[in-house]
Image 1 (cartoon, rainbow, N blue to C red):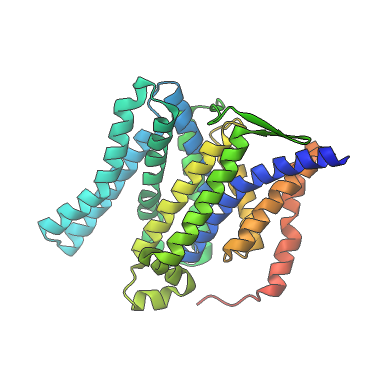
Image 2 (cartoon, rainbow, N blue to C red):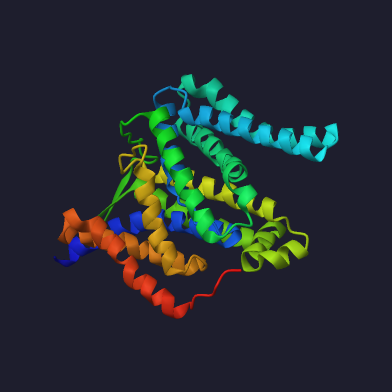
Length: 345
């Protein structure tokens, strides 16, 4: 391997690592706020890519039907809760409006415009709206009632949700793979490197999102409330911060990050209904570097995973996945010494 090949592999590793970093960011966010190891994060990645692919073909994405079904399920839960607690009609109306307005607006707009072959930026916005709206609905359907459960129980639920969403992805999108057009077709030469416009967009979008997240958590009241919940959930509740609201917001942000990751990676990788699991798993390996608690360490770990994958594919392409996932073993051993285990009460 000479220096030029190493540079090319390094660029490829950094490009993939940027995507894994976004996934790791979402995993750390969800776990720190809700204690949920969110295995279905990869499904948001796949749904984002496949929704855009359907819109590119002038078809109504299956995620619209899934969104409507999820909104209907949450509405039924709201009705049951209202009947059990005897809510006033005005309160029930406000709750149903808050539950249904966003999903129906996003789904209705997508259904009305799907066949019109809109420009790519408009299709991207519709995709982000549809997939992001799934986040809080998924939290309400699968996790809110178990907010006080143990981490192991929440992990088991996450496994079930993952299989359910993967199966629904197969039903709505089929077994075919899709690859979306690049957002920018330009290319630039930098020494031995050929930088594509899509690569630059991945770096720019990832950096912009990281800066936006830093501003959100550091400057806004809502972001500080989320940060407080992640540091001390009991203390945050005593200060009037709703754990349910924090959980729903963290899932909303995770769904947005997942959909954006799928849009960024789909021009360079063929996405299938189950591809998101592997991408999410690599993001999880990166998140483990930070103990599912540190954003900077998780980002560094995810970039490291991308580099290991790139160089591993050069030396032993048939075993690149084995190499990547074997790395988690010494990391777990290291974390076990750095963070001693405490019994959960």
